[in-house]
Image (cartoon, rainbow, N blue to C red; front, side):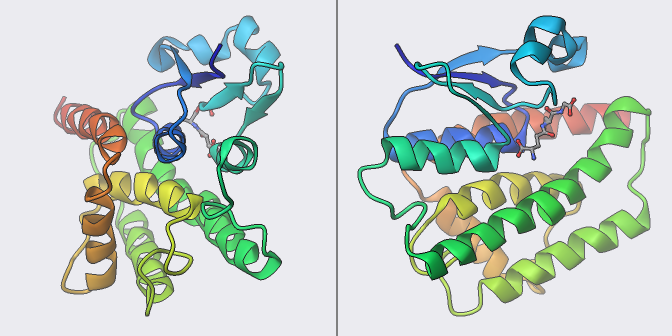
Length: 217
Ligand SMILES: N[C@@H](CCC(=O)N[C@@H](CS)C(=O)NCC(=O)O)C(=O)O
């Protein structure tokens, strides 16, 4: 039996778990919920995750984990052959954790603040202050990548998986100026070369189509 992952491909946090699972070489059983029909708000799902967010993991032994960052750390700790994706060394882990919290508090949130009015309130434009915020996020990331291949050093970690799914989605909404943010642009290109990157690509393309349609509708 494979651990169950409740998903919607459009979601950046869900795609970060796809990347982690692919990097670990493990299979998760995807349970797709119809987000726009409100499947995640139904009592049977609320019983599993009262915060009703996707992704949510239910492992074979009944362990339930939600929040993609916690899921990714859990999967590496439980299924990783080594700790390279989420180092045990305190100082290295602290840097990865900082980047993960940057994803939660800035990158994903910056994207979510733009998307929700488009998805749920019929908004057809992106306010200037949210575009400015997106550029602030790109600028922070540009600084983090100074002298580094990946966001927390020379090894890829789960922080890259969280940030690549959020940042490529934010890029759909507020395009990254590669002249201003060359390190961010190079990091995206590096990520796209990963042998398992396709698991981010499909949901990202669906997300782009979805946003294009909603902004035009
Ligand atoms: N910090 C959470 C964010 C998860 C999240 O907000 N997911 C969205 C989809 S992208 C969701 O499930 N929204 C439904 C809701 O909040 O009710 C994570 O990383 O898992």
